[in-house]
Amino acid sequence: MIQNEENKPSFLPTKDVEDFRNYENSHLQDTVSRAYKNSHTLQTFEYASEKLAHYKALSSGVQMSIWEAAELLNTIVDESDPDSDIPQINHLMQTAEAIRKVYPGEKYDWFHLTGFIHDLGKILLTDKFQNQPQWAVVGDTFPLGCRFDESNIFYEYFKDNPDNDNPKYNTECGVYERNCGLENVVMSWGHDEYLYQVCLGNKATLPEEALYIIRFHSFYPWHKQGQYKHITNAKDESMLKWVKDFNMFDLYSKDAEPVDVEKLRPYYQSLIKKYFPETLSW
Image (cartoon, rainbow, N blue to C red; front, side, top):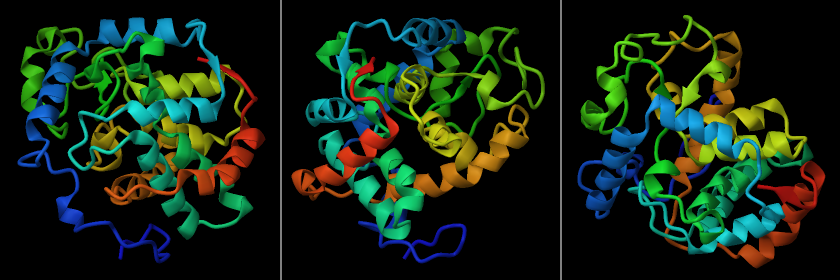
């Protein structure tokens, strides 16, 4: 049984903890490795900055609800994930329900909803958004504009990234001031940052803890490996507990068995109504 930081009993993982995040010899190894090679080679400071500027405008012309976005994920499989090859909406519901069991009640309903929506940014992979490439949407995220840390998965693939040889970007802090805070750092572009911008642009009323989870849940070198402390600040560290706690549910609830989405739908639609407008710009 996994325990959270408050030592509250949590839930039984769906398999041995050591079997999660297997980046060495999983049955999806070739697909996962290829996704990370592309990501680590092509995600540059310039690329991510341009994508952020483009997508934060929410000018795609797509208008839909949170639930409609979740249904879009039925056709998506994350090629960077060695733990699961089931449709994404099942993963969202598994994560949310795992959180709900350990953090029941209205006080934490924002946490339940965060579990359900945290990966909605992956809709960038659908035809509504011109089927963006997997390497530009999924996988662990990492700071750009400073030296790539060896704690990153498949670190060796960064050798072919143009920023790796650029003296402007390859020092410890690069273009940043020490302890500048993650809100001032350009992260590799992907579904995390996109959904964060969607939440901001549509004036979602989620608490800041939820927004941190959405924005940085894939930043494993920080919340799992404890690296990049030279660019984080006190605010980041105060939010780290929630990101780490969420990661436990996000990672260890993955299961090949689907959940009954329709049975749970009314509860999550009620939370969506509480924290989001009926229709969002994407």
